[in-house]
Length: 182
Image 1: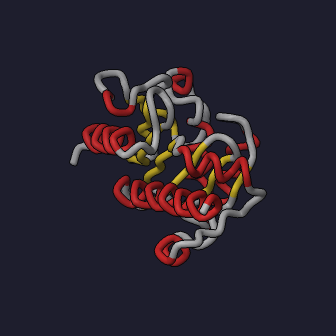
Image 2 (image 1 turned 90 degrees about the vertical axis):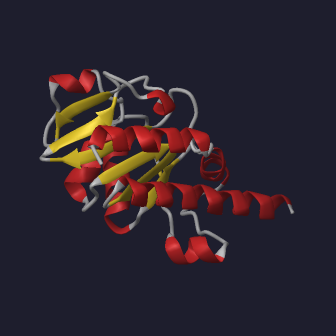
């Protein structure tokens, strides 16, 4: 599948599944030493012409101004991990978990515990060097991390894999919140 069509497909899936809303979240793919990433302010379920920006893989570039503010975080993750695809959601139960718990997040459900293992909760402002360092460090050994009060970064070899990881983090966080009020 064409990378642009694939990003658009997963943008629609993220919004339809409630993993992100409106202009929140971003998606990228590593292709030929470039990063194809959603543009700043993109509606992920309506990615059209101009909704994707190609930025340099190794260093900031002028196109970063058009890309998601999280482009530096995506760049750091690609530099430090084997990821080829990244999905960043603003999934509500994962965000709530990161606010209510110190971390790391330990899924209580069998699938989450087996599939995800420990999910680090990291700190850093959106698009900041601190977030780039903390998220990329966490993702060296983990498939996802939750940014405190902000959302999930999920990685994979493909967008499908990153989507499954992001979905599983939200599912496990939902189970945790339901058990806590139970």
